[in-house]
Length: 173
Image (cartoon, rainbow, N blue to C red):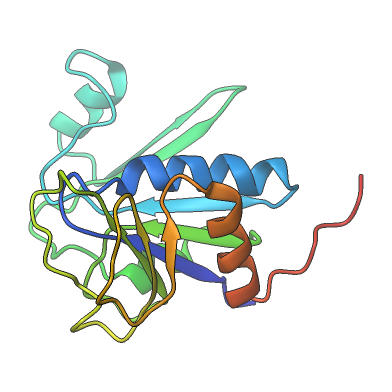
């Protein structure tokens, strides 16, 4: 089964992370199983210097899995490898109802563009990206030809995404 993938894109400080977080909470409240992929433009660490897993990676381990009763994580050190394409990351996720992808401006999956007045850049990405199917904004967008949703109306944005992705209502529990 191919995962259903929908993206949240926009310039720095446009509200992507907050919108993604609120959409995850809304879809989860509705009973959907949601996964996320976040693209970072910088190096990052998910464990701290001195921890056992950090020491394993620092020693040269290619992959380090951390497992406990509450969660597990797999870290893959790229070393001299190129950043993997989104498709390869998606292929490694467990089945779910929807994957929300934050970032990945240049990928072809359907996306909503987040726009806030205090973003780093206010030039519309939708003008050059046919995969952007709507805009979520905190200010009027009089020249936008796509549907424009209030960035704080999470229910309406979730409804738009669910309809666009043809999400079936989850079974009642």
